[in-house]
Image (cartoon, rainbow over all chains, first blue to last red; front, side, top):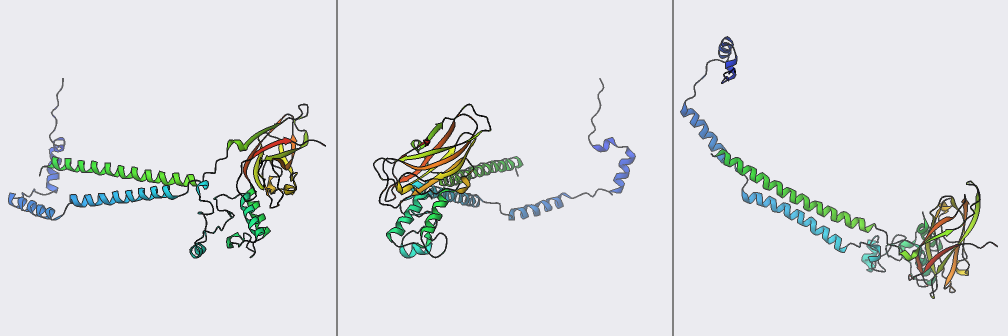
Length: 169
Length: 188
C-alpha cells in the first residue's frame, strides 16, 4: 500500500525554482511589529464601537409598526364585511346603495337612484319599469336619475328603456 | 469576542424575524381573502327558489327525418292565486337541440294582450327573457296565459324546456308568490 505525504501548502507542489522566482517578484516580506498590529486592531475596535447596532427597542418599534399595519388592514376588512351588503336582498327597501346622486342625497336626505334600479332593491328587472310607470301614472314627483334616455323628460320612453334593459340577454 | 456566540445570536434573530414576517404575510393573506370574499358575495345573483324553475317536455313525432322542420306554439301560464297579477318576468330556454324561437305573442287577459318585452336577439336562438306589467285596474287572478312563444323545431322526438319565473308582483309592486307552467298550445 502506497502512502503519499499530503503537502502542507500549494507551494510544496511547485518546483523550488518557481517558488524562488515568485518570492523574488513579490519582494521580501515585511515584518509587522506586534505593537503596530495591536494599534491597528485598537483603532478598528474604536471605529466599530461607534457604529450603533439596532437596539431591541428599535426592532420592537418596527415590529409593532408592522403589527399595527396588518391589524389595521384586518380591522378594515372586518368592517367592510360587516357593513357591506352581501346580497341584493339585504339592501333596505327604498334605498339604493350602489348608485346615488351625492348632491341630492345631501340636500334632501334621500338616496336617489340614477340607474335602472328605480325601486332601489339592488336588482334591475321589470318591477323597476313598473315602479316608474306607476309613478308617472300617479303624477308623483320624478327624480332626475329616472330620465334614462336623457331627453329631459321622464315618460313612457324611459319605462320602455328600463324594461328592455331588464330582458336583455 | 466570542465569534460563535455572535453568529448564534444572529441566526436566532434572523429566525425570529423570519417567523414574524411569515406571520404578517399570513395575516395579510387572510385580509386579502376576506376582501375578495366580500366582493365575490356582492356579485352573487339572488337565489331562485326551486319552485320557480319548471322543466317541461313536449312530445314530438318520432317518424320524421333529422332535418325535418316543423313549427309549434308554447303557452306560458302564471298562476298568482287569489292575488292580482300586475307584473311578471321569466326566462325560457330549451335544453334540447333543434329549437329556435321565431315569434312571441302576448297573453289572453286584456292586461297582458300586448306582446311582452323581450330582446329581439332572442329570435333564432333557444333562450329568451320575457317580461310585462300592467297598470290597468282589471288584472288577472288565478292561472292565466301571459305569453305564447312560437318555435321552430328540427328533428324527431321530444323537446325539453326550462322556464324560470324570476319575479311576479301585484298592483302596488309588491312581489307575490306565483307558479309558472308551460304547455303546447292547442291547435285550432
